[in-house]
Image (tube, rainbow, N blue to C red):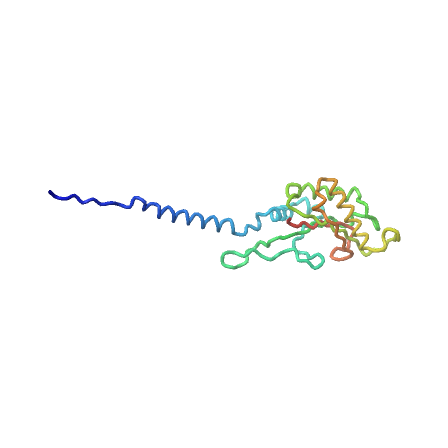
Length: 203
């Protein structure tokens, strides 16, 4: 009687291909989530939105991602692509919004209605991103002489700081956390004008 021959196939062979597939998928997701999505961060989105906002330009606001403040560069450089070549979009670690010039009278640090109106406009534009930001309110002065009050103001640096402090108080009244708003005073440079700037920094 002829003996039957049985051939057994490896019933678990599919597991090898399956494990290879899982490895490929895992590698894909590791690469995907580690690619620098610089322009997808809240600060990046806000920067591009504000730079493209026509109403700001029409009212003499300036959104400035490149100016240095007190020697600190506002950009980290350029995103690096797969071939170690820089892409066109810079990585914004912070940027500045300059309010229109001369929104204060000479020697004054209290917020005028005009200054409040300009601040309100910025607050409305950054509202949905404010939880992701630290904000430095920068006071500015011009070089025009004013009558000094020795008990309060004896220098442009103090005057610019007081302008900044009043803006911070106003921001807190308008819903900003006191731990995310800061006072910064500058005299003369980089702006020779009686105004404010907002320096927005990613938290």
